[in-house]
Image (cartoon, rainbow, N blue to C red; front, top):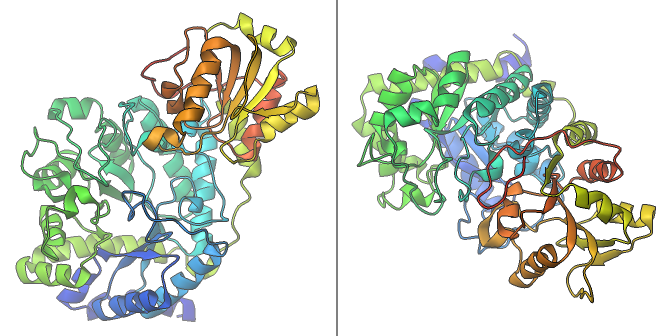
Length: 529
């Protein structure tokens, strides 16, 4: 037996019942934690045989800073810190840890200066190009492997059929169940080829809600028949083809269980997921600190026990590991504990036996892949196409709403056409103008009007209402719902503001690239085929 094999041999025969329960816990760990906090976690891992950890950026980041009131500090050395902490936490563990992260669009979702790939909604705009999605899944999996992360809690397979959804939106492949299934399947195939574990989420479907489960409990009042027809469709199909784990979201489905959120509902986890859909793998909770469920269980350890009783195997973002272990050991049967433990153990064997963290390679360089995706997702939503040539051939104004970001698209137009970049803020118009309006929204999430202040948003709306405008949107297409577009508005959706996407958008403006993409969602107020 080599030194590496000895290090990662899983000593199942030595574990006590309490240590087996410890293997079911996945506390959160943070890149920007203090040395005191790191040492506290090392002690917890060592003394209580914690089975896995999930990395987040900081205690001010999304999953912990629900109200967004804490400032997130940029960390130039995030990736090096990730490697350091993974090494420290693995050394503290008597049994190798599963290292997990939410890398839906790459490690960049949590870690600065790491490769970032397009959001799911961007991939959703691809038509007949699932091979590109497979390449994204493989690249993300390879990046995870390079870092020593074995478990990527992705992809999102929620069908985003509610434009008001504040938390899924751009993280979903779209609003069509078959497309979501096919694109998720391609992503999973790519990621599996890298040896990285997966988790489809958020069961039984978080798409059709206007409530953020970080803050409150979303209610999806649908029958089992309705759910099977839509929300559960991707889960069912993917389970049939084989997946590693399913993440259960914090949702109330009163027609299935009017008393318990899905996280603590045996009717949803044990009956629907296990029995009806036949899933035999690991069931993991969404973050247990989220207010949708955490506020309902003020006594430490009670939420963890309730989720376990309902059928959960891995308790993600448990803030009360010690109390949770005690509750489960003292109240659950040995048979039930062993059921979950054995599922987790099989997952660990899969993660560690074929590949070892010592085999890690380098992170990918995503520019070329992103550029290829950009060439295939640019989406034309033209209300009056005859206006486009008029705008381009006239003495157009090159107007930018860049939100402090690098607008290389507008700069390329300036360089090529001699039309200086004009910042919309402070701009006034004496007459009706032909305008190329490039918009880089401040935020990808819909909260607070995607980050636009009222003054800028009103100015955008005024330009659209009074001038001949061709819009290039480098962001979440749901932004279009707040722009008060006209029936004759012409929009090119580019989806991302990456340099590769801006470069391809400029080629589109020059008629050197086609708009091959299709909008993967329905908008509330504006839609052009």
